[in-house]
Length: 333
Ligand code: SF4
Ligand code: MG
Picture 1: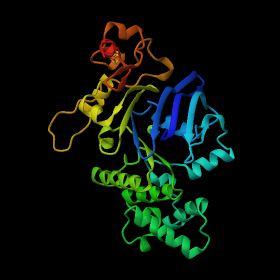
Picture 2: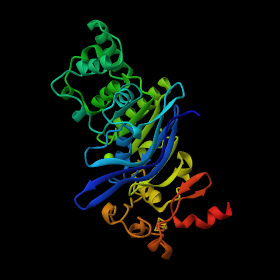
Picture 3: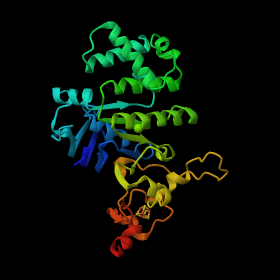
Picture 4: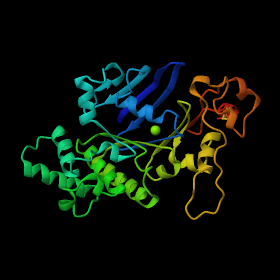
């Protein structure tokens, strides 16, 4: 197959004083080479823990992978199940260094304020590539900055992170992440701290770099609006579970799960005067999930059955949707 990552029934749990929190509870997906999967949901829905699991960086000792598989496929087609390796193992370090890279929301926390941006990119390059000569390394760092669209990179390379704007810092982060030529880039809310114009620029940049490097991307966001242009497929998560999975076009034109519809209606559309309708209520406490559907309390379409029975996943028109509303439609199709 053309898969880069294939996740099956992933369960990532946390031990707390009050019990076991099932942060990721039976999530399955795969991403093909050169494709982008968007993962969407409010905070606390399990999207960040899904990405931490892929990197084998679930916070220890409380967090642990309780079940499932995370199959990573190398370029030559061989695979490993990441869940079978210690986070600290040689194998995992090699995967994080050479196969997968991650970028986050706030580059200020990942960039070290006391070193120049250039030195930090050089350190990243040194970890993965065989450049030894100082001038060569510097030249390489300048090239990376240029690649991510920073103008006058030969001057900028000697500046400190605080001398960069938020958008430029995020570009520098991307440059560092790409220095290992990753086959999978995990982007966890990479544009959330940026204004909409810069956000659009960064997403365009990621799309261009993706084509250029034939890289797969897992793009995590709470804002459905930002992934419309970059994602091939979208997975909507709620309380650690996948509630809808669909190709991007049908998700936007025909959202099925009431939660997905709520996310779309609460999204500001530039130039539109339509009143926003935030989803009422909040994500339930993972330690005290309701007996039936986890979205029951907030759902405008809730029915009697939803109160007591957790819906299974139904397949409707090539989409997967975890909601009782589609019980009949699946039978019909
Ligand atoms: Fe709403 Fe029922 Fe569907 Fe849950 S199963 S999302 S409560 S309609
Ligand atoms: Mg998060």
